[in-house]
Amino acid sequence: MSHVDLKAGRPVTAPSGPVAGRLGRFDGLVAIVTGGSRGIGLAIARRLVDEGSRVVITGRDPQALEEAEVQLGVERVLAVGGNTEDPVARAQTVSLALDRFGRIDLLVNNVGAIGSRGPLTEIAEDEFQAIVRTNCFGPLGWIAEVATRAMSEGGAVVNITSGLGRTTSSQRIGAYSATKAMLEHLTRQLAIELAPRIRVNAVAPALVRTQMASPRFKGRESEIVATYPMGRIGDPRDIAASVVHLLSRDADWVTGQSVAVDGGILLTSEL
Image (cartoon, rainbow, N blue to C red; front, side, top):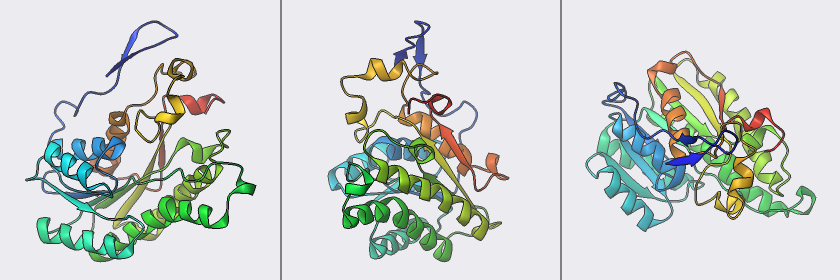
């Protein structure tokens, strides 16, 4: 997918697929990708499959899951419906993954929710708790489930956080920002607790072209693109490329880190 660099007038192209010569990095390995039926999660699942992994994708939309499973290849992908916040659903997913593929080596916590908008002082407690359950307790529960039941030496986890977890939000989504900041800290804490057996890292995207993010750029994309040093907003494949690097043995001495994949926007004050 190509876009135009408004500053230089040149075409800018997002990554189009696996890096030449890197196919097979995940041969024999099994990954779980939450929220893997669309957007960033689907791009991550596709990249993992392309590089040899078998993948379990989760989600709450049966039709989207079925379509993703067919796209990615039913012989290498298992789609499991369920709510990421539900410990029973998490346990069942891990059991199905073990029954089908025999092991779990990799986990990507991609599910996230923006939740209620508005000033923090006006958000009801139960609404804030709902965002925390999705963005923090859900990932923590997944990590606990796979770490205690399935992952052995050499396992790797990547949490999808957000650039908004590193700054304040003028977009009335302060609760979302706060939970993503919490997830970044959970990443560091769990990296210490699970080392050296399991590595835990995070990727923090800025604005990415997904269905969930579309209200933030719809009708004003040119204005937003002009604020990004790299001349475009993100593509799900940009995020997938960094995620699979952190999951791979190429990052075997990296844990507790959060990588900003943001087109340079955090270098400015525009996020």
